[in-house]
Image (cartoon, rainbow, N blue to C red; front, side, top):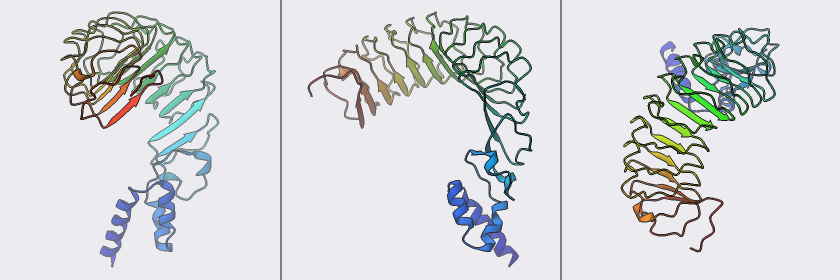
Length: 313
């Protein structure tokens, strides 16, 4: 009987991994015996800690949202603890995902606990981050108004880094070699020679960027977004294993034999007016700006038109 019960519990555990948290609770309510298993099942979805604080299976929640005035303990099995705050005061030392409110703009010296792995600053934050970002952070995102120097400020632990808005500080030499996702959606229009870390797989070069990319992109890049002003030749410029390629509204350069055959998702903007025959047969998803429809590759299964599109077809 004990062996059967163990098998029964193991089977229920495997089934529960396929269910939402709500579905798990419904499933556990089928019988008294099933109800006792709530103490063995892990709940994955994000939930406010105030909603679970009195539950007998409080420790089994893996993803919770807390508040600045949180004075109670964290669930035993919690891995992801989210906090959105308007102040840098009294941040609990078990928070892993920290987001500052849009209006937050205070100094953050000695404020961010070493438990934080994901750090997002809001729209108005514009303070020095020197010696402020703990070495535990792997994702770092700045808001629209941030424009302080980052020299020696980005820990080597960071693998995802996002800039936007008015940021116009020196970037070259200040990026961690471990970065895999890099977004420069800011006032960036400098040469990227020897700038992009060699491990980057996702790269977005923002609206104002219009520099040569030839021989400047790592072979690791699989997702590439080029902003609205970009209109440079791409001959022998794109990494051979790229899968997602997005051009902005100004791009109108020859693409024949210039787009790798690995590309599956391809997007063009408003100005593009080159022959569609030159699109490689690897493309399955195609987004067009405002161009007469020519010979769409037969491999395309998803065809979209941008809001600029105004052609007969």
